[in-house]
Amino acid sequence: MKFTPLIEELIESLKILPSVGPKSAQRIAFQLLERQQKGAKRLSHAIDSALSGVCRCQQCRNFSEQPVCEICQSELRRDTRQLCIVASPMDVLAIEETGHYKGLYFVLMGLLSPIDGIGPEELGLDNLEQQLSHDSIDELILATSPSVEGEATAYYISEMAAQYQLSVTRLAQGLPSGGELASIDGKTLGHAFSGRKSLG
Amino acid sequence: MKFTPLIEELIESLKILPSVGPKSAQRIAFQLLERQQKGAKRLSHAIDSALSGVCRCQQCRNFSEQPVCEICQSELRRDTRQLCIVASPMDVLAIEETGHYKGLYFVLMGLLSPIDGIGPEELGLDNLEQQLSHDSIDELILATSPSVEGEATAYYISEMAAQYQLSVTRLAQGLPSGGELASIDGKTLGHAFSGRKSLG
Image 1 (cartoon, rainbow over the protein chains, first blue to last red):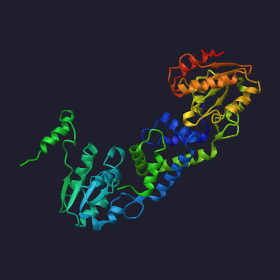
Image 2: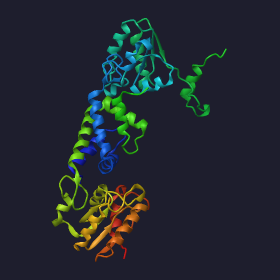
Image 3: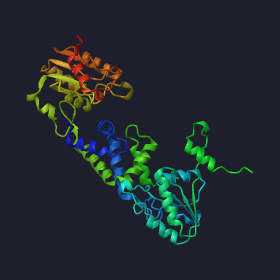
Image 4: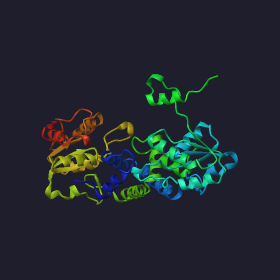
């Protein structure tokens, strides 16, 4: 026995959500229909509006509701000679919240992963190369995560940037703030050692 | 710094989903916009269709796309002298899958919970009492979960049914205390059915 076709379709389409399996999809579907009808209406409306109203910034590829996003528009208040490469819009938010960086961004919307069919084109690296060739950038900061894909992507971009007159940097790796030395993994500790700085 | 208004609204409305907090809502929103645009469209469409196309069966209160649901319509093939009271449509599915029961259902769509404002009216118990008073039912099977609310609801219904000439039974054997009915394996549920005991 199955549920009605409309409920089955709702359950099926809920399975696209990350970490939602068949059982959770059922639970969510019934919760929406039983107790969250208003919320469900709001959700479907929000999905539709976001799908039609959110585009990519022509300059940095971040999500935006205008052709050029807020950060790229505020060039006067930002250091346009620094360009920080990140994997996702959430990374932009995280960096903005530190208040440590006033340059511009380029959002890859992913990391190189040939197995998933994500190559340089999917990350807009042709667009990035165009921006680099305009010679208005002094420093390219590679802020992808220190994972296999993140390192590979950073390496690929650094190779691409080598022909231009700019300094290419990578976020420092080392001890996370507040971490207990004894509980930090060997790889991180290794990076912390090799990247040690003179106090003098 | 925040995301764009449309993305913020999407994140907010994703928070109505069970066990989705602010961080998960962000992750889901970006996954939908980055990689799941088709799936997101399908989801919003499925929500709309289900909200407008799914109603309650006039007889058993289960979700249905017709005024009377499939199970209630197939009275000829089922034992109409047994009525099984369950809390949710998922419980109906779980019981149907055991193949141990051929009677009809009454779906409460919840359990008595005065703290959440769920009283007898919200569970359609007036409707249930009407059905009981028609004297076509021999056995009322109380298949609510063995939780505090489930027991209280079963007790309330058994009191209500006491004035009618019918046997009131309660699922007993095999149900682990505090467990959720819908997630129990078929064998256990089957044992519970065959070992049901009279409350009188």
